[in-house]
Length: 147
Image 1: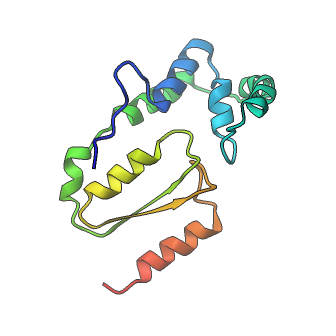
Image 2 (image 1 turned 90 degrees about the vertical axis):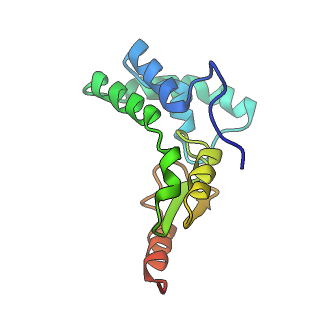
């Protein structure tokens, strides 16, 4: 499997969100659009939604911008790829194909590097998928399987 890293000079999504927060004190309209259920692929629809997204992003109140920036930068810097091969327990990684923070390649690489890693990807879900009915079902199934 190829190693998945951001191209030189290209920021990851958390770094982009942190940069927008640092500059404006708000998430960017692009971050807001990325957070919508299902990504907006149509250029026309994206162009129509962008002004609304700018307004919506400004309405989101961030009580402590410094903490939010620190959290995003810490997430972005957290890299344990070299240790994943040492995780010997069976591990379930669940992700959404519409995740606005992390790429499917990053999820796939993480699951692949764990000797007993298993990945479930929900095609129509994003970053906040723990409330999805299929999430509870899949975790329960994984935990109940015979050892």
